[in-house]
Length: 135
View (cartoon, rainbow, N blue to C red):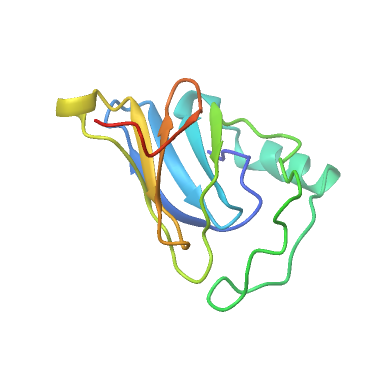
């Protein structure tokens, strides 16, 4: 199956471990939460992506900044459950993870950022949490 939503290459996948949800981190500067039940078959996805093209950037994450910064680059057929933004995936392949089940119940997502920070998001609300949040 295919899940439509990212507009650039995926850098990491982390499963929640429940057989239903996983997150992806991507060079389009977003993390997405997915439900495997929303998958399209390959032929239906191919039709959707050809009829509604999205901008394509000619850039290399290894030595360039993301050219789409400041643009709303949502895919018109995005089927993700939630999108999280606020981190940078430039010049390195950043990873994103669910927080530990034993201590947080996987309520949060965290990711590094190429600006040297670590971001935290509430899985349900999508809100990015500030440095004052403690776990």
